Length: 210
Image (cartoon, rainbow, N blue to C red; front, side, top):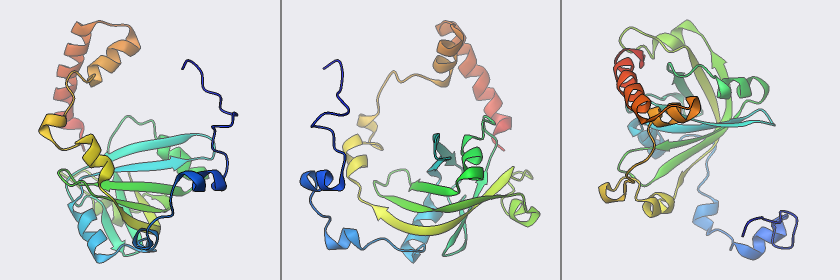
């Protein structure tokens, strides 16, 4: 199939259409959502060194990875998450989105665990000195801290990660492009450039993580 008809009879355009394809969720699934971080949710976040943060300004959409030592996201209380923003590429795509639309979607992940924990809410960007200081690493505070007001939270079933064999050593793909490969493709360079780029980047990481 070379083209897809986005307006044809096989395109789902209504809730009724979805209902003809998917069964209603089981009661336990439909009611597992809470308006706060539960005790077991707090434990999962404390164990998590990685999350994906989704934002949108209503037009553009961004999905950004955030990671640090387990527990790098702190809970001010059961309704408020604190997420430090460490040095990155300075595109600030998600930050720009938050300035016009504070809505966020977050997925927490823990290596080796096929479960995930999802949080939706609203976020503000803070440079409050007391907030920055509580996230200092090696004497370096984050640029800002995102303060997330929790609206919904729930654990997600492990099927997607099981299918992907995400943590299985025999499930890891080989030959995946590296950071250097992407840089070489962007700049019209060859594999030697990619190799050198990766080596230099590995050295930069020793001083640029915080």
